[in-house]
Amino acid sequence: MAGPDAAAFAIDAVSGAVTLTANPDFEAQSSYSFTVIASDGVNASAQQTVSLAITDVDDTAPVITSSADAGSVVENSGAGQVVYTAVATDETSAVAFSLSGADAAAFSIDANTGEVTLSDNPDYESKTDYSFTVVASDALGHSSEQVVSL
Image 1 (tube, rainbow, N blue to C red):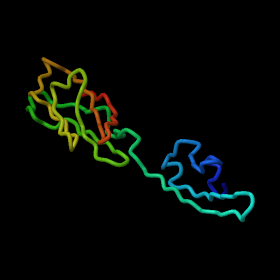
Image 2 (image 1 turned 90 degrees about the vertical axis):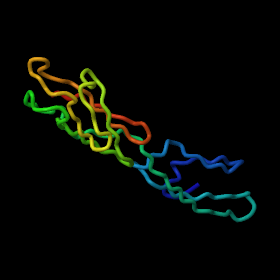
Image 3 (image 1 turned 120 degrees about the horizontal axis):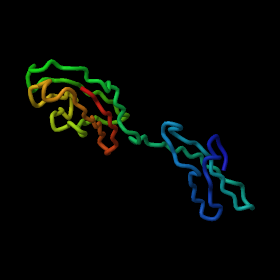
Image 4 (image 1 turned 90 degrees about the horizontal axis):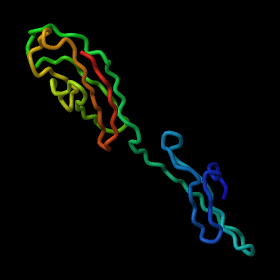
């Protein structure tokens, strides 16, 4: 074998099967090029240049970029108000949001926009602070979490 990426491959001298010697990673190298040389020891050798493209797959979880601090709301300011907006990015697919954590039941989240709303009217005398966890998931099931305080 020869060529610029020949070191990344092994070839079975009997069967001619070519295998990668390491796990391919699109972010490190998106394609390979090598030349297979066949020889019977008697006749002139034959060469074939081969190109191998690596397909990118979503192999990372979404990255949550919104703050862990939702700020504060004024008591008796009304139920259903947006108190936080989760923001996340993913390499290749859309992100869906959900909630978990200690006070998740007191909130709802729009799975597409990340807007978190308080279900009941806030009352300082009943509860002075909240904690919930935003979960950002991609289409392949990778997820990231961030604890948020209000």
